[in-house]
Image (cartoon, rainbow, N blue to C red):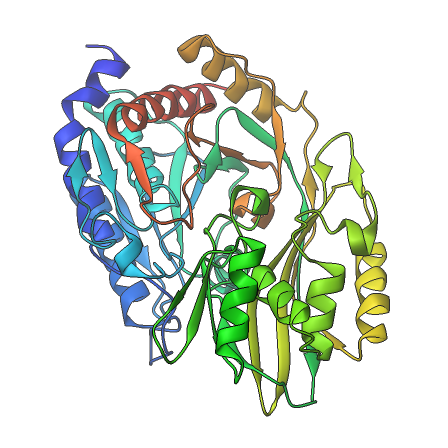
Length: 446
Protein backbone atom coordinates (compact mmCIF):
# COMPACT_ATOMS: atom_id res chain seq x y z
CA UNK A 1 0.00 0.00 0.00
CA UNK A 2 1.29 3.45 -0.90
CA UNK A 3 1.29 6.57 1.28
CA UNK A 4 -1.65 8.17 -0.51
CA UNK A 5 -3.81 5.10 0.05
CA UNK A 6 -2.69 4.82 3.66
CA UNK A 7 -4.04 8.34 4.25
CA UNK A 8 -7.37 7.44 2.64
CA UNK A 9 -7.67 4.37 4.87
CA UNK A 10 -7.85 6.69 7.88
CA UNK A 11 -10.16 9.27 6.28
CA UNK A 12 -13.27 8.65 8.38
CA UNK A 13 -11.38 8.50 11.66
CA UNK A 14 -9.56 11.74 10.80
CA UNK A 15 -12.84 13.51 10.03
CA UNK A 16 -14.33 12.31 13.33
CA UNK A 17 -11.35 13.69 15.25
CA UNK A 18 -11.53 17.04 13.44
CA UNK A 19 -15.24 17.32 14.29
CA UNK A 20 -14.49 16.40 17.90
CA UNK A 21 -11.97 19.24 18.13
CA UNK A 22 -14.30 21.70 16.38
CA UNK A 23 -16.95 21.11 19.04
CA UNK A 24 -14.73 22.88 21.58
CA UNK A 25 -15.32 26.68 21.30
CA UNK A 26 -11.69 27.52 22.04
CA UNK A 27 -11.94 31.31 22.11
CA UNK A 28 -9.73 33.18 24.58
CA UNK A 29 -11.39 33.16 28.00
CA UNK A 30 -10.75 34.21 31.57
CA UNK A 31 -7.60 32.96 33.23
CA UNK A 32 -7.93 30.22 35.84
CA UNK A 33 -5.34 28.25 37.76
CA UNK A 34 -3.57 26.00 35.25
CA UNK A 35 -5.70 27.42 32.46
CA UNK A 36 -4.09 30.73 31.45
CA UNK A 37 -6.33 31.23 28.43
CA UNK A 38 -9.57 29.92 29.88
CA UNK A 39 -11.39 26.61 30.16
CA UNK A 40 -12.31 26.19 26.49
CA UNK A 41 -8.75 26.51 25.15
CA UNK A 42 -7.52 24.15 27.86
CA UNK A 43 -10.23 21.68 26.85
CA UNK A 44 -9.14 21.90 23.21
CA UNK A 45 -5.56 21.16 24.25
CA UNK A 46 -6.77 18.10 26.17
CA UNK A 47 -8.71 16.87 23.13
CA UNK A 48 -5.73 17.32 20.81
CA UNK A 49 -3.46 15.44 23.20
CA UNK A 50 -6.04 12.68 23.56
CA UNK A 51 -6.23 12.32 19.77
CA UNK A 52 -2.44 12.15 19.62
CA UNK A 53 -2.32 9.57 22.39
CA UNK A 54 -4.85 7.41 20.53
CA UNK A 55 -2.67 7.61 17.41
CA UNK A 56 0.34 6.32 19.32
CA UNK A 57 2.27 9.53 20.07
CA UNK A 58 4.11 10.28 23.30
CA UNK A 59 2.34 13.32 24.78
CA UNK A 60 3.16 16.08 27.23
CA UNK A 61 1.01 18.84 28.68
CA UNK A 62 2.58 21.86 30.33
CA UNK A 63 1.43 21.74 33.98
CA UNK A 64 0.74 25.47 33.75
CA UNK A 65 -1.49 24.97 30.71
CA UNK A 66 0.43 27.07 28.17
CA UNK A 67 1.16 24.38 25.57
CA UNK A 68 1.35 20.69 24.84
CA UNK A 69 3.15 18.48 22.39
CA UNK A 70 3.02 15.02 20.86
CA UNK A 71 6.10 13.19 19.63
CA UNK A 72 6.98 10.05 17.71
CA UNK A 73 10.18 8.57 16.31
CA UNK A 74 13.73 8.29 17.59
CA UNK A 75 17.02 10.07 17.05
CA UNK A 76 18.80 13.24 18.03
CA UNK A 77 17.31 15.50 15.35
CA UNK A 78 13.93 17.03 16.10
CA UNK A 79 11.51 18.12 13.36
CA UNK A 80 8.76 20.48 14.52
CA UNK A 81 5.22 20.79 13.20
CA UNK A 82 3.66 23.81 14.85
CA UNK A 83 -0.08 24.44 15.00
CA UNK A 84 -2.60 26.22 17.18
CA UNK A 85 -5.86 25.21 18.81
CA UNK A 86 -7.35 28.60 19.72
CA UNK A 87 -9.78 30.37 17.38
CA UNK A 88 -11.16 33.85 16.86
CA UNK A 89 -14.75 34.51 18.00
CA UNK A 90 -17.51 33.34 15.68
CA UNK A 91 -19.26 36.72 15.45
CA UNK A 92 -23.01 36.81 14.86
CA UNK A 93 -24.17 33.17 14.88
CA UNK A 94 -27.26 34.10 12.87
CA UNK A 95 -25.04 34.85 9.88
CA UNK A 96 -23.74 31.26 9.83
CA UNK A 97 -25.43 28.61 7.67
CA UNK A 98 -24.56 25.98 10.28
CA UNK A 99 -23.71 26.23 14.00
CA UNK A 100 -20.05 27.30 14.21
CA UNK A 101 -19.12 24.73 16.88
CA UNK A 102 -20.86 21.60 15.64
CA UNK A 103 -18.54 20.46 12.84
CA UNK A 104 -21.39 19.97 10.40
CA UNK A 105 -20.56 17.90 7.30
CA UNK A 106 -22.50 19.03 4.22
CA UNK A 107 -21.87 18.52 0.49
CA UNK A 108 -18.35 17.25 0.99
CA UNK A 109 -17.36 20.03 3.36
CA UNK A 110 -16.74 20.32 7.09
CA UNK A 111 -18.07 23.59 8.52
CA UNK A 112 -16.94 25.16 11.76
CA UNK A 113 -14.89 27.88 13.39
CA UNK A 114 -11.26 26.81 13.23
CA UNK A 115 -11.64 24.03 10.67
CA UNK A 116 -9.32 25.91 8.31
CA UNK A 117 -7.47 27.92 10.95
CA UNK A 118 -5.98 25.75 12.37
CA UNK A 119 -7.70 22.68 13.82
CA UNK A 120 -8.31 20.82 10.56
CA UNK A 121 -4.70 21.12 9.36
CA UNK A 122 -3.34 20.24 12.82
CA UNK A 123 -5.26 16.97 12.89
CA UNK A 124 -4.44 16.31 9.22
CA UNK A 125 -0.71 16.63 9.89
CA UNK A 126 -0.95 14.14 12.77
CA UNK A 127 -2.74 11.69 10.49
CA UNK A 128 -0.08 12.24 7.84
CA UNK A 129 2.53 10.76 10.16
CA UNK A 130 0.09 8.00 11.16
CA UNK A 131 0.03 6.94 7.50
CA UNK A 132 3.81 6.48 7.62
CA UNK A 133 3.57 4.49 10.85
CA UNK A 134 0.83 2.27 9.39
CA UNK A 135 3.20 1.46 6.53
CA UNK A 136 5.88 0.43 9.06
CA UNK A 137 8.08 3.27 7.89
CA UNK A 138 11.16 3.70 10.07
CA UNK A 139 10.96 7.14 11.69
CA UNK A 140 14.61 7.65 12.60
CA UNK A 141 14.18 11.29 13.50
CA UNK A 142 11.83 12.66 16.13
CA UNK A 143 8.66 14.36 14.86
CA UNK A 144 7.09 16.69 17.40
CA UNK A 145 3.67 18.31 17.02
CA UNK A 146 3.65 21.47 19.12
CA UNK A 147 0.20 22.72 20.09
CA UNK A 148 -0.05 26.47 20.63
CA UNK A 149 -2.92 27.97 22.58
CA UNK A 150 -2.75 31.74 22.11
CA UNK A 151 -1.87 32.27 18.45
CA UNK A 152 -4.84 34.50 17.72
CA UNK A 153 -3.80 36.93 20.44
CA UNK A 154 -0.32 37.32 21.95
CA UNK A 155 1.53 34.03 21.28
CA UNK A 156 2.13 33.47 24.98
CA UNK A 157 1.74 29.70 24.60
CA UNK A 158 4.32 29.15 21.86
CA UNK A 159 6.72 31.64 23.43
CA UNK A 160 6.51 29.71 26.69
CA UNK A 161 7.25 26.49 24.85
CA UNK A 162 10.29 27.96 23.07
CA UNK A 163 11.71 29.23 26.36
CA UNK A 164 11.19 25.97 28.26
CA UNK A 165 11.44 23.07 25.83
CA UNK A 166 13.67 21.70 23.09
CA UNK A 167 13.50 23.84 19.95
CA UNK A 168 13.25 21.81 16.73
CA UNK A 169 16.09 22.03 14.19
CA UNK A 170 13.59 22.91 11.46
CA UNK A 171 9.95 22.38 10.54
CA UNK A 172 6.74 23.87 9.22
CA UNK A 173 3.34 25.09 10.29
CA UNK A 174 0.18 23.96 8.42
CA UNK A 175 -1.48 27.31 9.00
CA UNK A 176 -1.50 29.13 5.68
CA UNK A 177 -1.63 28.02 2.06
CA UNK A 178 0.29 26.03 -0.52
CA UNK A 179 2.91 26.24 -1.88
CA UNK A 180 5.63 27.17 0.63
CA UNK A 181 5.38 30.60 2.28
CA UNK A 182 8.96 31.86 2.39
CA UNK A 183 8.29 35.42 3.62
CA UNK A 184 5.82 36.89 6.13
CA UNK A 185 5.26 40.62 6.60
CA UNK A 186 5.95 42.39 9.85
CA UNK A 187 2.96 42.66 12.18
CA UNK A 188 2.29 45.72 14.32
CA UNK A 189 -0.84 46.08 16.45
CA UNK A 190 -1.46 49.46 18.04
CA UNK A 191 -4.03 51.33 20.08
CA UNK A 192 -4.86 55.01 19.54
CA UNK A 193 -6.64 56.73 22.44
CA UNK A 194 -8.33 59.98 23.31
CA UNK A 195 -9.61 60.96 26.77
CA UNK A 196 -12.23 63.28 25.33
CA UNK A 197 -15.86 62.11 25.65
CA UNK A 198 -17.23 60.71 22.43
CA UNK A 199 -20.45 62.11 20.89
CA UNK A 200 -21.58 58.53 20.15
CA UNK A 201 -21.48 55.16 21.87
CA UNK A 202 -19.83 52.48 19.75
CA UNK A 203 -18.27 49.14 20.64
CA UNK A 204 -17.30 47.07 17.64
CA UNK A 205 -14.88 44.39 16.57
CA UNK A 206 -14.03 41.03 18.12
CA UNK A 207 -10.33 40.59 17.24
CA UNK A 208 -7.62 42.81 15.79
CA UNK A 209 -6.72 40.22 13.18
CA UNK A 210 -10.23 40.06 11.76
CA UNK A 211 -12.11 42.64 9.68
CA UNK A 212 -15.19 43.55 11.77
CA UNK A 213 -18.44 42.41 10.18
CA UNK A 214 -20.67 44.78 12.15
CA UNK A 215 -20.62 47.96 14.24
CA UNK A 216 -23.39 48.97 16.67
CA UNK A 217 -23.93 52.64 17.37
CA UNK A 218 -26.04 54.61 19.83
CA UNK A 219 -26.60 58.25 18.96
CA UNK A 220 -29.37 60.85 19.11
CA UNK A 221 -29.74 61.31 15.36
CA UNK A 222 -31.03 57.88 14.32
CA UNK A 223 -33.23 59.09 11.49
CA UNK A 224 -30.48 61.18 9.95
CA UNK A 225 -27.92 58.39 10.31
CA UNK A 226 -30.24 55.94 8.60
CA UNK A 227 -30.74 58.41 5.75
CA UNK A 228 -26.98 58.92 5.36
CA UNK A 229 -26.26 55.19 5.38
CA UNK A 230 -28.85 54.66 2.65
CA UNK A 231 -27.41 57.46 0.54
CA UNK A 232 -23.87 56.10 0.92
CA UNK A 233 -24.99 52.60 -0.02
CA UNK A 234 -23.91 51.05 3.31
CA UNK A 235 -25.88 48.06 4.61
CA UNK A 236 -27.40 48.39 8.07
CA UNK A 237 -30.10 47.12 10.42
CA UNK A 238 -32.28 49.21 12.74
CA UNK A 239 -33.93 47.47 15.68
CA UNK A 240 -35.51 50.66 17.01
CA UNK A 241 -32.90 51.16 19.71
CA UNK A 242 -29.57 50.81 17.90
CA UNK A 243 -28.30 50.90 14.35
CA UNK A 244 -26.06 48.07 13.25
CA UNK A 245 -23.80 48.87 10.31
CA UNK A 246 -23.06 45.72 8.32
CA UNK A 247 -19.75 44.71 6.76
CA UNK A 248 -18.13 41.41 5.84
CA UNK A 249 -15.46 39.66 7.86
CA UNK A 250 -12.09 38.48 6.55
CA UNK A 251 -8.59 37.97 7.87
CA UNK A 252 -6.74 41.18 8.68
CA UNK A 253 -3.89 40.08 6.41
CA UNK A 254 -6.30 40.54 3.48
CA UNK A 255 -8.61 43.38 4.52
CA UNK A 256 -9.59 43.99 0.89
CA UNK A 257 -11.36 40.60 0.97
CA UNK A 258 -13.78 41.97 3.57
CA UNK A 259 -15.81 45.09 4.27
CA UNK A 260 -14.92 46.98 7.42
CA UNK A 261 -18.13 47.98 9.24
CA UNK A 262 -16.23 50.34 11.57
CA UNK A 263 -14.81 52.34 8.67
CA UNK A 264 -18.25 52.61 7.07
CA UNK A 265 -19.75 53.88 10.31
CA UNK A 266 -17.02 56.49 10.76
CA UNK A 267 -17.58 57.84 7.25
CA UNK A 268 -21.33 58.07 7.85
CA UNK A 269 -20.86 59.90 11.16
CA UNK A 270 -18.44 62.34 9.54
CA UNK A 271 -20.97 62.96 6.76
CA UNK A 272 -23.44 63.96 9.50
CA UNK A 273 -20.91 66.50 10.83
CA UNK A 274 -20.40 64.44 13.99
CA UNK A 275 -16.80 65.06 14.92
CA UNK A 276 -14.31 63.68 17.43
CA UNK A 277 -10.60 62.77 17.38
CA UNK A 278 -11.29 59.12 16.57
CA UNK A 279 -14.11 59.69 14.08
CA UNK A 280 -12.09 62.33 12.22
CA UNK A 281 -8.99 60.12 12.12
CA UNK A 282 -10.93 57.13 10.77
CA UNK A 283 -12.83 59.14 8.19
CA UNK A 284 -9.87 61.22 7.00
CA UNK A 285 -6.96 58.79 7.22
CA UNK A 286 -8.52 55.35 6.77
CA UNK A 287 -11.88 55.73 5.02
CA UNK A 288 -12.51 52.78 2.73
CA UNK A 289 -8.82 52.11 2.10
CA UNK A 290 -7.10 48.83 2.96
CA UNK A 291 -3.44 49.60 2.31
CA UNK A 292 -2.80 52.55 4.63
CA UNK A 293 -2.00 54.84 1.72
CA UNK A 294 -3.45 57.92 3.45
CA UNK A 295 -0.93 57.45 6.27
CA UNK A 296 2.07 55.64 4.77
CA UNK A 297 1.83 56.46 1.07
CA UNK A 298 2.48 53.65 -1.39
CA UNK A 299 4.33 51.32 0.99
CA UNK A 300 5.35 48.05 -0.71
CA UNK A 301 8.30 45.92 -1.76
CA UNK A 302 8.93 43.33 -4.46
CA UNK A 303 9.21 40.42 -2.02
CA UNK A 304 6.01 40.76 -0.02
CA UNK A 305 3.82 43.40 -1.67
CA UNK A 306 1.78 46.16 -0.04
CA UNK A 307 1.35 47.22 3.56
CA UNK A 308 -2.16 46.45 4.85
CA UNK A 309 -4.13 48.21 7.59
CA UNK A 310 -7.19 46.89 9.43
CA UNK A 311 -9.21 48.73 12.08
CA UNK A 312 -10.10 45.72 14.21
CA UNK A 313 -11.80 47.22 17.29
CA UNK A 314 -13.18 50.50 18.58
CA UNK A 315 -14.68 51.63 21.88
CA UNK A 316 -16.31 55.08 21.96
CA UNK A 317 -18.12 56.37 25.06
CA UNK A 318 -18.37 59.30 27.44
CA UNK A 319 -15.10 58.05 28.96
CA UNK A 320 -13.10 58.50 25.77
CA UNK A 321 -12.29 56.82 22.48
CA UNK A 322 -10.08 53.89 21.51
CA UNK A 323 -9.11 52.56 18.08
CA UNK A 324 -7.21 49.26 17.74
CA UNK A 325 -5.38 48.72 14.46
CA UNK A 326 -3.60 45.77 12.85
CA UNK A 327 -0.82 46.63 10.35
CA UNK A 328 1.11 44.15 8.18
CA UNK A 329 4.14 45.79 6.57
CA UNK A 330 6.58 44.60 3.87
CA UNK A 331 9.59 42.54 4.92
CA UNK A 332 12.14 45.15 3.78
CA UNK A 333 10.41 48.07 5.55
CA UNK A 334 11.71 49.14 8.96
CA UNK A 335 9.40 49.11 11.96
CA UNK A 336 10.48 52.66 12.86
CA UNK A 337 9.11 53.97 9.58
CA UNK A 338 5.69 52.50 10.31
CA UNK A 339 5.62 53.59 13.95
CA UNK A 340 6.76 57.14 13.25
CA UNK A 341 4.28 57.61 10.43
CA UNK A 342 1.21 56.55 12.39
CA UNK A 343 2.37 58.41 15.53
CA UNK A 344 2.80 61.59 13.53
CA UNK A 345 -0.67 61.39 12.00
CA UNK A 346 -2.37 60.29 15.23
CA UNK A 347 -0.89 63.21 17.16
CA UNK A 348 -2.46 65.66 14.70
CA UNK A 349 -5.84 64.30 15.76
CA UNK A 350 -5.06 64.36 19.47
CA UNK A 351 -4.72 60.58 19.69
CA UNK A 352 -2.08 58.92 21.87
CA UNK A 353 -0.16 55.95 20.49
CA UNK A 354 0.21 52.67 22.42
CA UNK A 355 1.88 49.54 21.02
CA UNK A 356 0.00 46.32 21.68
CA UNK A 357 2.01 43.72 19.82
CA UNK A 358 4.83 43.36 17.33
CA UNK A 359 6.17 40.46 15.30
CA UNK A 360 9.22 41.04 13.14
CA UNK A 361 8.99 40.01 9.50
CA UNK A 362 10.63 36.77 8.41
CA UNK A 363 12.28 35.95 5.14
CA UNK A 364 13.97 32.67 4.18
CA UNK A 365 15.79 32.42 0.87
CA UNK A 366 13.93 30.43 -1.77
CA UNK A 367 17.05 28.30 -2.16
CA UNK A 368 17.01 27.22 1.51
CA UNK A 369 17.02 23.38 1.72
CA UNK A 370 13.76 23.32 3.70
CA UNK A 371 11.97 25.49 1.16
CA UNK A 372 13.43 23.51 -1.74
CA UNK A 373 12.43 20.12 -0.31
CA UNK A 374 8.85 21.09 0.50
CA UNK A 375 8.49 22.78 -2.88
CA UNK A 376 9.72 19.65 -4.66
CA UNK A 377 7.17 17.43 -2.89
CA UNK A 378 4.34 19.87 -3.57
CA UNK A 379 5.11 20.04 -7.31
CA UNK A 380 5.46 16.25 -7.58
CA UNK A 381 2.14 15.68 -5.82
CA UNK A 382 0.08 18.35 -7.57
CA UNK A 383 1.75 19.26 -10.84
CA UNK A 384 1.02 22.88 -9.96
CA UNK A 385 3.30 25.90 -9.92
CA UNK A 386 5.35 25.61 -6.75
CA UNK A 387 6.95 29.05 -6.72
CA UNK A 388 7.29 30.03 -3.03
CA UNK A 389 5.03 32.87 -1.89
CA UNK A 390 5.08 35.81 0.50
CA UNK A 391 2.11 36.60 2.73
CA UNK A 392 0.73 39.07 5.23
CA UNK A 393 -0.25 36.25 7.56
CA UNK A 394 1.49 35.85 10.90
CA UNK A 395 2.14 32.17 11.55
CA UNK A 396 4.20 30.18 14.01
CA UNK A 397 6.95 30.06 11.38
CA UNK A 398 8.15 33.20 13.17
CA UNK A 399 8.52 31.35 16.46
CA UNK A 400 11.78 29.61 15.56
CA UNK A 401 14.54 29.49 12.97
CA UNK A 402 14.28 27.33 9.85
CA UNK A 403 10.50 27.19 9.84
CA UNK A 404 8.00 28.02 7.09
CA UNK A 405 4.24 27.97 6.60
CA UNK A 406 3.12 25.15 4.29
CA UNK A 407 -0.58 24.64 3.41
CA UNK A 408 -3.20 23.55 4.00
CA UNK A 409 -5.27 25.70 1.58
CA UNK A 410 -4.67 25.16 -2.14
CA UNK A 411 -4.46 27.86 -4.84
CA UNK A 412 -7.93 28.85 -5.98
CA UNK A 413 -9.61 27.69 -2.79
CA UNK A 414 -11.36 30.33 -0.68
CA UNK A 415 -9.40 31.49 2.37
CA UNK A 416 -12.13 31.48 5.02
CA UNK A 417 -10.20 31.86 8.24
CA UNK A 418 -11.90 34.37 10.58
CA UNK A 419 -14.97 34.46 8.33
CA UNK A 420 -18.56 33.33 8.60
CA UNK A 421 -19.17 29.78 7.33
CA UNK A 422 -15.53 28.75 7.62
CA UNK A 423 -15.18 25.35 5.96
CA UNK A 424 -12.78 22.93 4.29
CA UNK A 425 -13.38 20.68 1.32
CA UNK A 426 -12.79 17.15 2.58
CA UNK A 427 -11.18 15.99 -0.67
CA UNK A 428 -8.70 18.87 -0.57
CA UNK A 429 -7.90 18.20 3.08
CA UNK A 430 -7.16 14.58 2.23
CA UNK A 431 -4.84 15.74 -0.55
CA UNK A 432 -3.10 18.10 1.89
CA UNK A 433 -2.65 15.18 4.30
CA UNK A 434 -1.04 13.12 1.55
CA UNK A 435 1.33 15.99 0.76
CA UNK A 436 2.21 16.34 4.45
CA UNK A 437 2.93 12.60 4.73
CA UNK A 438 5.31 12.66 1.77
CA UNK A 439 6.88 15.95 2.85
CA UNK A 440 7.57 14.63 6.36
CA UNK A 441 9.04 11.45 4.88
CA UNK A 442 11.31 13.61 2.70
CA UNK A 443 12.42 15.66 5.72
CA UNK A 444 13.23 12.50 7.66
CA UNK A 445 15.35 11.25 4.77
CA UNK A 446 17.29 14.51 4.33
